[in-house]
Every structure is written in structure tokens, then in C-alpha cells.
Length: 413
Image (cartoon, rainbow, N blue to C red; front, top):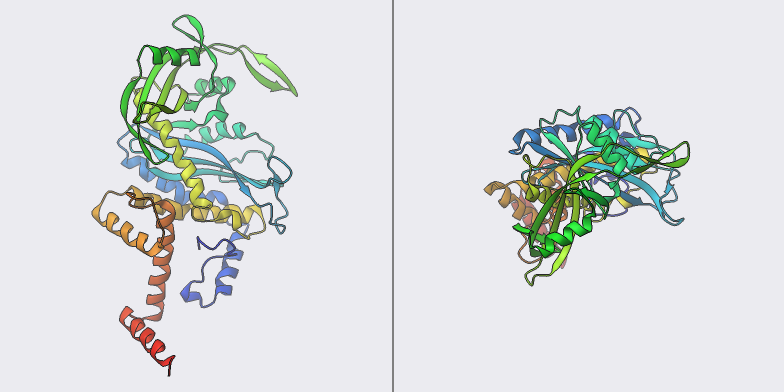
């Protein structure tokens, strides 16, 4: 599938098909074929995820959950668009669960995808969520289904602070799901006292209990990563909506770890900091590892970028239904997985191949960087088109050069 032209209605014309119209018609038929289920299209992606788990050196694998908007406000041909926030924010709502290798942070594969439209919920799940379900209501069914994916590793569900909900923490902990969630300030019980998480963080800062656990990147600059942690008890009431009314529930107190992470620049300034809650046992993953896991959550943002303006230009696809967009999205995700695997490889052959793809892409990147996902994706499509053309026409590069020279010479005769 072509990745660069924003208004492309279908894939780049394949040489063996002869005409662009033929290729586009074939793609249209496939993407609108109701017999092509999203669950079936997800199986190759899940197979890659299982393979990655088998190669892992860690006892854990991370499943990052996140949501993003697909803006189609100018696409009047799509009749199932959804009003996302305000009246001019029109499009689809995409939910993704991305598998990430816990030892290295390598992106493995998207394992679950939900695409919410104005009329339906298109999902790779065995039992899709309801269209009316809130984002957070989609999490627990995915957690349950992840237990059936044969991942051979303990799954840690990594979620941003939208999932900071005591009621859900209690439900997940009761069912044995491991979670790592960024949280806002909240009152907890620590060492027998009722305190705010911010107060614990400030105490660690004043007593110099943060420890240096290595380097990290922040907006392209090298920073120092520091962590501290405390065992806390979540004991307060949480709210739930029952029969249309919000009620307070006195649930079971649960013991979790509060991990505080901060990024410090060369001048000693704190440029970013996070408060995290997790029920992963301390003897299995210390605070430095927990902080690293949340740092790797950003991989899902990079995945969204590769689907959107960084590569696949999903917000310019011309398919007219959410179902067709969802099918094409899963195909595009396979290309993203190929690029992620190429980026993760440390072999000399892969490094050489990345250099070739960067040259073919024609992309400019920051000084000191070897490659980027969007540039590798663009270069890969150029390579595929070039090799297919040469094979289909049985022509050599030398013959093409001679023809080019001849055409230039005759142009002035």
C-alpha cells in the first residue's frame, strides 16, 4: 500500500496488474468484502507478537493501551463519521493495544484494534466492545483476551493517566491483571499515615532519595533518569455510576507501589516527572525497570505517527466506510511492523539495508541519527516498486541508463 501521497484512493499500481485502475479496483473489492474479518486480519500481527515473546529475555511483556483521533472533517463521502469532541472535530476513534518487548523496548505488534464510527464499532476482538462503551470500558475485555493469546510471558498493561481510576485498579488487581498506570496526585496510606503522593515525592526530593538509573532521551536531548519508590495502600472510596447515578463504593484496600520518575538535564533541572502506580511485585521488577517500562510507553505514540502523518497518511484515505478503513489499517500496520523489526535489528546486514533505504527515501533527519521509521517506510516502498519494475520488465540498470542517454540525445535532434 502506498504511503506518501495523501489523496491516493488505493495502492500504488503493481507492475504485474498493468494499470492503476485495476489495482485500485482490486483493493476496493478487498477492503469492502464483508467476508474479510478484522479478527482474521489481526492473526498475522498476533503471530509476530507471539514470536517476539518467545525471543524475549524478560519474564514480562508490555501491552500499551492508548487512543487517538482520526480526523475526517473534510471527507463528505464518509457517511458514518463520529463527532469526537466539538462539532468541527469529526472522524473516527481508534483504540490500540500495542505489544512491546519489556527487556529492550522493541515494538512487536499491535494485538488489538477498535475503530469506533458513528454507526458501529469495528474490532479485532473475539467479542467486540459496544459502540457506546467508554474508552476505559474497553480495557478489561482486552486484558481478559490477552490471556488467550499464548504470549508465554506475563503481560503488564501500561496505560497513561486517563486510566487513573481506583475502582478499575481494584477490579484489575482482583482478577490478577498486572498494570502500570501514570497517575495524578491522590491520597494514600503510607507507613501508617494518610498522605498525598506529591508529599511523598517532595520528601524523596528533600532527603535526596532519588537514585540515578541511567540515560534517556527527552525531545532529542540526553538526560539523566532518576527514580524512587514507596509501598502505598489505596484505601479510599471510589465512585461508580449505577443506574444512572454516581455512588461512592468502599472497596477492598489494595497494596501497590508508587514509583516516582524524573528526567534531569545536564544543568540539574527537572524537565519531566511522572508518578506511577503498579501492582508488579518489587522482587520481580525494581523501580528502575518500572520507570523504563513507562518510558517505553511512548512507542505507541510513534506507532500512531507512522500510521498518520509520519508515513501511512491514514487521515487522507478515501475509503468511504469505517469497515474499509479498519481493514486497510491492519494491512498498513503490517508494514509498520516490518519497519519496526528492521529498526530493532542489530545485525550488520540490517544496518547496511537501513542505509540503502534512507538513501532511497530522500528524507532529511537530525544530525547523528541513523534512521527514522517514516524514512525507512518511504524508502522501503521505493525499493519494492523499483525491484518489481525491474523483474516485470526484465530490464537491467545498464539498459535503462542507455535508454535514458539515448532519449536525451535524440531530444535535441
